[in-house]
Image (cartoon, rainbow, N blue to C red; front, side):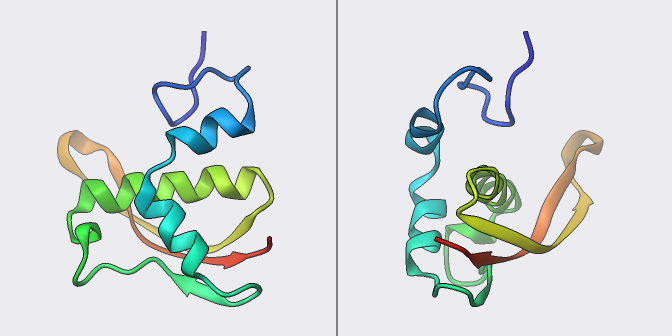
Length: 96
């Protein structure tokens, strides 16, 4: 069985279940963003300074994009540990 990027959610689980698994950091960034404005996911001065935390939060924003709540307008990937590619820059627009 395949899994979403969130390792604890199955493809058949509801959007509400996905939102519950989403980090509070991603939800805070979403709620603090302005409707229709492009927002950059911040790095400095927060827990998002750690590359793995930033990547996880960016992937949580992708969940919101699949729900139609945000639009990802730009992202950049960089090499991470073990050859994985981590999202190291992300801009989104709040739609809802």
